Image (tube, rainbow, N blue to C red; front, side, top):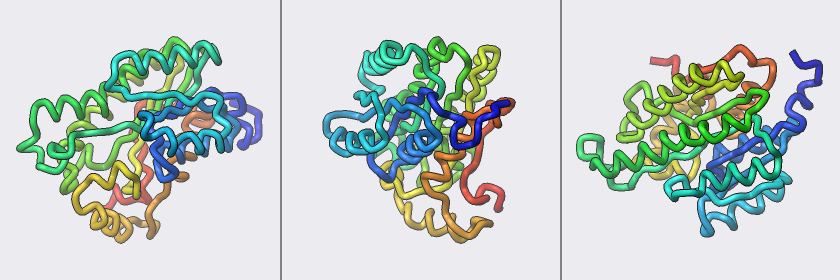
Length: 260
């Protein structure tokens, strides 16, 4: 166990955060939390259209690496890890907060989801995490942590979540299997399941405001969580205080998941 004070537990840790779109993103909350605990950040942005929204945040967080990453484009993921290897020579934490499905397939119900749309959603939202883990593992020379963002709809039916339910279920299963495979190398893997949050990605879901209001009503703590709740929970899991935890889905939702 580390003898460092809590605020210094991640000083010098090298952390890759993927999926920041703006200051409301879950990934931004994670990046901010890791930075507050002393970590050095590598941050990705989707494309040139997204860069003006992400670059000021990366500058604010003093991230030495700001890199383009569209996981659907061949070679971009590999380029990110090559840059990390060249700059740092190692990596301690990866936060995967990437999900996407074609709008028609997302909003049209699972029964009418096209094979192509299902495959795209699975590749971007799930298999990219496996590819990321494959590239990260050799750089995690002293062990590390991998996090993937899921949602309650992976395990229970949430109206209008549609194709993302099966995709997130696959993501959680992939995380468990990766935890098993990478455990002997000191690498821990967690699916993280935040409660509903007002993010750009969530805005694509039909009647999302109703889901938010219902979660706030049902939460035992009486309120919704925010992106910093998610960020600090991930940061905790990356510290020595959580060194014996792996493969478990952590719900950060104010207790909504326990209420029938």
